Image (cartoon, rainbow, N blue to C red):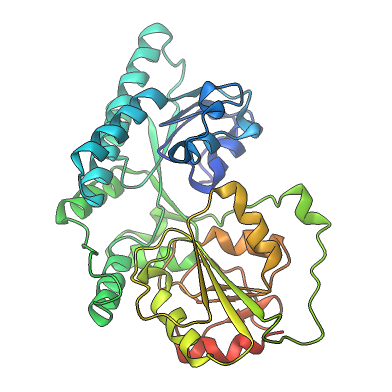
Length: 375
């Protein structure tokens, strides 16, 4: 990264609101963002914000005030048409995701072509885009002689193998799960080959990419940066003198409720701790069956990002037993609300064991249960 001038002009192509637009925000703050291309952008004055439909709730959060003055282009109406079409056709998750990736890339390239036809770039910009929705965009950038940087969102195919093994171990917890189609990984490997640099967010991800032959000198580790909410700065966490069945220890799991995130180990820990004054809060969209769960688990379900703060505030410990993660931004979110953390070692390094939490020696229920006494 040292070869990249601080005065370089950057184009950021981003499908989704990953990391709260952290890369684009940093570039804009430094005065280097020429353009952010994203799938949806809903400004505060948009009529979509006046529509109370629950399906639009997450879309209404597709904006960040730090980018209010940034050059942003999006395809919000086209995205709505895409999503409605696929819902009506009842396409599968992977089919829909891959189709969305292609849809976004096609429109991003069309927009770049239109912009250049009106006002060509004086000097070749640097293009940044995220993995799995990048191949066509990277090919286009390379054809123009631009430098390309890929934001790798996870540990790639190494993670897929870990997840496959977990599903084989617990087939009844997520019977509808399907592995990624082979062409998904073929496309990803082509993305990596077209990238001048690959950014990962943790040493764990870097190790995983090296395992599949990506040269170490092409990988840069850039940990996530998370500015805490202003209201979290003065938040005071108060614990009772002792936990009881009337006021149990509240262990929060927040994120995708999938086997990759260590949910099987969480469920095992809950069973081991039945009868103890401990309650597990599971917040997030679930893809596992809850048929075999324990009475000390509270399934809260998916909530909008704007509502997650109350769960961080009301819980006592944050549990992140992931089997593999590119970083795990929820660790920083939980820490900003002064929560002690119990995490695995297969993600970004946020926890210093024994200082601000505990690092699990392994991801099992038996390893999690003893740490219920962290307080």
